[in-house]
Image (tube, rainbow, N blue to C red):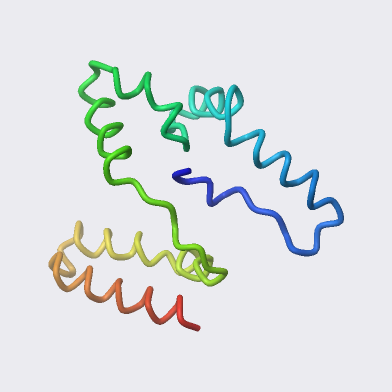
Length: 120
């Protein structure tokens, strides 16, 4: 599955099995496709990408292809939330687009920050 980092289950939940069933419901089959249709996001599972991959829309097709070929899940670590909270990737992109940093410097700095946060 690609994406889905917004779906989580607290380790203190009293209904872990029910929560897991909800996550599975939202990320597979009919509900995953409906969620993608309603939000405009690509589905999080490759099997549901067929319609997007077959699109002739130049704003859809190349991105669907890139997602299937190069998409990856976020690192499986409890510390990835720290990277998201600090907005490391967003800050990197902003620094590049605003001209504050060149691509090489911005990506090097972001990689160092991510490594530090992930290894805490």
